Length: 141
Image (tube, rainbow, N blue to C red; front, side, top):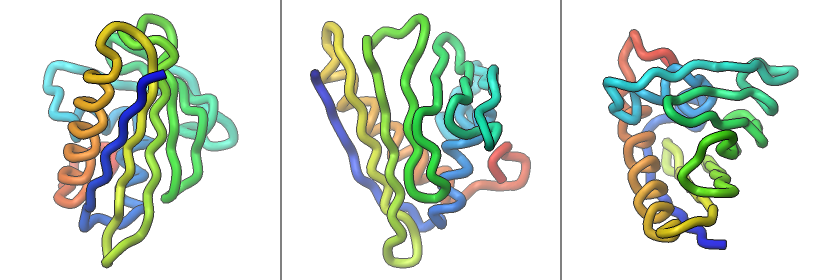
């Protein structure tokens, strides 16, 4: 199965980066998707944003499969998905007063390797940049 990963640094704390991953409504903000909406469609347990939570980010839905605050967040795409068996794991490590972010993903389908390489690089960079300059008004702030 094709996979890809990207590692970037953010001056933001692991806690701040993790909040941006865990809060569904923050995704369109840090991804710069002005036309997209995201919401938690189903709550996880015991944390509403934790394992079992489903977030709807038009046009896909993602289910949280790992929720370890400030260290590890993982999700799989469910329902309609351009990449079959898609799974992303984001690991956060405190480093040099900030956070090392490793964004890894795997999945199957035509062109999956190229899509995964582009997605992991792009998502990691956007997450790192936004978390370091998050302003009041962001759902994860």
